[in-house]
Length: 350
Image (cartoon, rainbow, N blue to C red; front, side, top):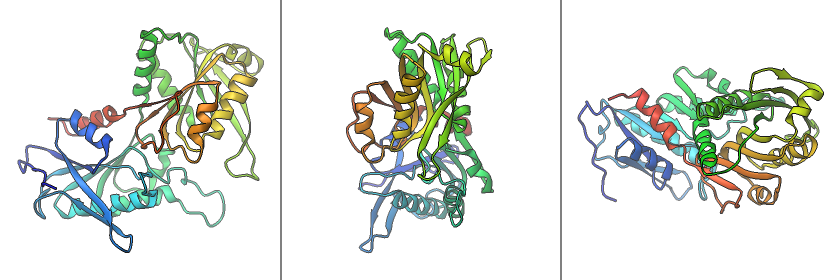
């Protein structure tokens, strides 16, 4: 591979690195009109990580901010553990080459392991972030982290960014092209999703959706089966005029509406799909259902289940996690590169 030319002019305030064959990193660098410096990754015979930043000498980053765009998710035949170690070692290599490393993560693997529910469990999300801090990262930005409290153990800067404008722009595009999106209700499927759902509602209003309601559901979990939801109950309905309804009044107002379920992640997708088919459409009478999910992890047969859920008109996800299979017709991937480009521009103005 030919070595990428790197300017050493200190007025050029940052360089961008990303792993080879990472289309999101390429899109972000293209928006910023910067050359992406590739990070070659592989493994040694004993399966340990073998990474190399494509730079000409050992001090190539001296005096520079180095933007590393990398998420620790499954990619091809690499596990989350593989990509985590690759990021750790890339940060160390960039710092050793003189760089001040800022890590921008489209997805944080281990994000859901942010609390201890049983004795003997680790705070994995926090410790993975601390790994990157130990390697030399001076700031970590994550797209829609599951719980921002995972940042609390860091001694460096951190930032949680959302992609709600990306989803809102898509709904605006749909409406402009003739899709009827009247009587929209943005739905938080649990307490943890309230903030991002309300941010999406705000983004819709900014995109000229004037009549947008908000609804909050509460999950009852089956403690005998980890991750299994027993029931979902509509707790609160906030009308477009911001008046709040509960109980039967909320149920009556919810009926017949077009709902958009907002959450940070869909993994096996069983809970999400049952929430839509059994509860929001089946039990509470929504006329149509969409989903806006930042991270499409989609383990197991999730994509097949999505394709077979007739109550789900369409689910939108960002490209924060690469899809490993062809998506069904009712799934669309939206590019989140603009979110990172805007964040980087704000941090490094010309």
